[in-house]
Image (cartoon, rainbow, N blue to C red; front, side, top):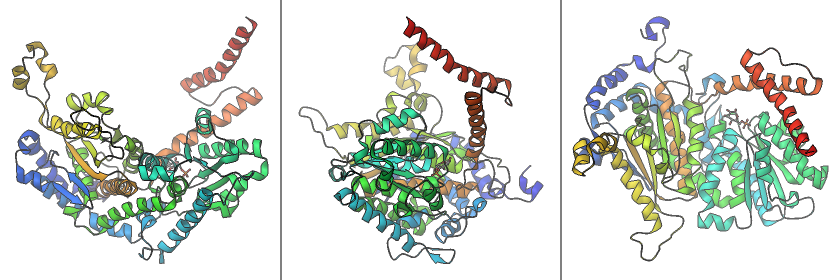
Length: 572
Ligand SMILES: O=P(O)(O)OC[C@H]1O[C@H](O)[C@H](O)[C@@H](O)[C@@H]1O
């Protein structure tokens, strides 16, 4: 029974557009991609270009009729109206009563984006101008450390949305020749995990005299970031004295009160706003400050321009030509109708190695929800499991499952002109062409497969035929970018950000909160108190179930065993 009948609430699954798609699934299950790919007109209608990006979604298990039905679903879910509401500063993050305006972070000067009666773009540029000024000073050596040395190394402390997006962008530009030149002599490290091992990796080879620490935390309360910040502060102070903090530590946060309480000068803080969700904050000071310190502000501005190009397209293009809408609809089709549990993100570029980890948070934290906006439990799955690796590494790892195991729609991302050209004499193709051969081969291998007859024709022994045949009919889409630079990295970021929002708009969920991460955090607080009492007062572990009590005791006693073991070794 649909919820509409029991509690007066409408889920998208109650709509005719949804049921129409459900009825259409069997028709699609009877078709094979190898046949669909014969239809040139169909393929032609499923290849689109926008601002240098080529999107080919002809290898989706879908016909033109499927897409008409998907557009009807988008209209039913009021996707266009929701996009407009987002760009107009409506509080679409209803559970937190906040607007969702990360697009305003990359709006060019002069564009007006009104939020609660106020144009937010001038405030955005005030912070960007401050970042430009500060990063120029540090890079040019007019802002120096406690002992007068240039601060050539940066450690950016932050986790989740205050880490993954900036890391993606940093890595994408690291091997871009122009960006690399701008970063010459500088190092940017990220410190996310509260694991002391991560601290030791972050500071390995760094000198406190030449290191600037940037604390990045939207709330300035995240346990991991706060402990790492204190650890880094003590590392700096131990060698440079307490007065060094003003020159060696700055912060990015929406909570400037807590920044001050931490002991930082508010002048050394770069603000942003509640209307920027953590995982959507790459284009705020969260990403822009560390990236500008590494690559210089003008380079990072190109990243903002690339993202804005997609923002503007998303806001203005009709549904049928709108890349994020198309991508979002494809994912809804695969998850909710073809029942695919996951999505593989497969960039054929080593520089995009941190794309999948960023999308994991962006997508799974946004759409991993069980109730609709009004609290009604969903009777369909929202969200998917995102994972991926750069090609061809993934091919030698998990592609087996994608070719012969589970049905996993794949995003293939290719680059026309590599950041690094290597052309060896005597080789059939250049190294980048070699990489891209795989980008072109894999989608067809997945779509066409290999029949029993084809396997037999190859002379494969009969008993091995079932093992060496491929069912095919496995969906993928391909995105081809002209090059990988700051601009296209920004485009790619915005494409995924908006695609994920579209999925949430259709599923009727709130993609902009993340209450699901809270429960584990609050239980950890209880464990922290227990650990402290056991270690400092010798109290016993109590108030937990048998399993947790056992494991906690084992952990707490383990240290003693280890110490005894060490002592034994010493005695020996
Ligand atoms: O930026 P912060 O406030 O430190 O938050 C860092 C991260 O922690 C939380 O647990 C959330 O799940 C993330 O969405 C957030 O990005």
